[in-house]
Length: 187
Image (cartoon, rainbow, N blue to C red; front, top):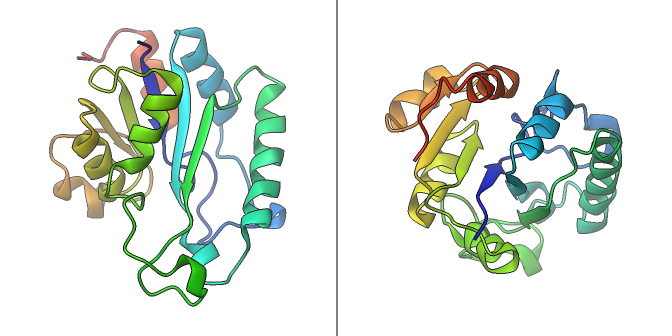
C-alpha cells in the first residue's frame, strides 16, 4: 500500500475565485507546482479530491471541468508534478441541473472520493495526508481514516476553529518546507 497526499483544488492548488470552471478563471497559486513536485519526490502519490458544485448549479459543464483539468495536468507535468488521481463531485442537493441534484456519498464532507482513490491506487489512508482549505475537506478525510490533517489558505481564521485536530499552515509551500525539514510529525 502507498501513502498519498490528498488535495482540495480551489484555494489550495489554484486561486479560488468561486466556481472555477473555465481556463480564464484558473490561476495556480504561487509555488504550488514546485511544492507538488517536492511531495512526489518524497514518494507520495498525489490525489485531487474536489467538490465542483458549479456543475450542478449550471455555471459550467463536466466538459469545462475536464478542459481545466487537462490544462492543469499539462502544466504540472512540465515539472513532474501532475496528479496521480483526480476525483470530483458534481452534485449538490439544490442543483439547478436535474441530473446532478441529489444527496450523494461523494460530496465532501462525505468521504467517498477518498475510498475511490484508495481502491484505484492501493492507498494506505491512515498514513496519508489531507491538505484542504475548508473544514469540510478535513472532515471528509477524517471520516475516511486519514490521520494527517492540514488546513491551509485564506479560511484559517473561520474554518480553523471548526477542525482543531488539523495542523494549520499559511499555504502549501510553507507546509511542504516544514515536511522537507522533518518539522512535522506524521502518523
